[in-house]
Image 1 (cartoon, one colour):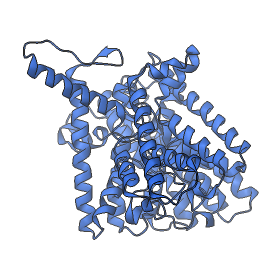
Image 2 (cartoon, helix red, strand yellow):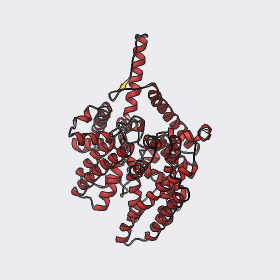
Image 3 (tube, one colour):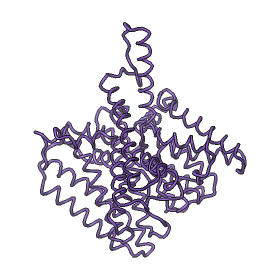
Length: 484
């Protein structure tokens, strides 16, 4: 049974959190005497008041149930993006709602696709909010909501599964969902602080270090510089961000367990992490060799650094760039294109299909081959030390099929708007996979400003669908869902 008042009341709390977060942008604008102080204050006030009104007017005191959790997650992300776009609209820097909504969705979903042509001309208050949306969306604004709000009821578990990437097969580090959300957020904050300190040590100023920490840990990709990380010539900064992009795209449950048990070996006991690290290593080597054979680059350290950075950036779905990889040799760009369909680990801040799902699909295929050879054999699939039931395996296969289908439909829609095939393909794959840059017209030195408004709304929808892993968003389209 769907109870609109319960959903709206919880959405009010979520909007309230977004409004309070907006206030953190004001100190930057006040210190630098920027002209957006009133705009940000007004946006925060509208958001906070709206959240309080929804909470008070529709308060029931009841917990959310399993069915309502899908609506809360999906509508929560949409409303967060609507209210999160207000600072951009009120300030006049993105007066068109389609642009502001696209930019905000890209932030909260940690995609990093942008319509901003000259971000360095923006006031610091808006740049800070733009990057903060990514950090909030990293582990998830709903996970934050669960971590700070008690009494989620039976729907709390489903909320967490729908919110955290790969939630249905994420390792549990606590029997209580609220406690688990708190531990993941604490781990997220601690690693973010370490990243921030290293960037400060290696020469970034405090503002840039904060913004890039937000975007790196969220695998988001927003930068305060038009040239992205390519602005910083320091190899130390580039290696630091490469390492933390890799860390952010690793299952955060593993980070927590490695710290709690003081055993780094927990990483290598995890099959998905080994697969993920192996893909990153092999892809980086191939891209570096492609750059070497093409000539014109520096020494081996530079080639390895450029290759590793770009492979990890795209594979982790961060989307930073240190070079225009669209101009790289075909062998290198071919590997980077394939990385657009990999993603970070299950339970990380990365999006996309994820290595864990590929492992399950591969093992399922191998099991089918074994059944052909031994028809009467009783075989079971194991993953992460436990036997997988048929429902979960079916869910993974369905996810993969729907993912490819959505890419195809997205490409078709964008080509109908007159966008070339390579730009359409990589824009669709990039937004659905929450990556950011693609190739051709949406390459690392380009942006999405040229896309018609209808295309921006389409890509915004794909970002949300991809961030919520397809099912929570699409289930709302089923008439049966809304029946009593």
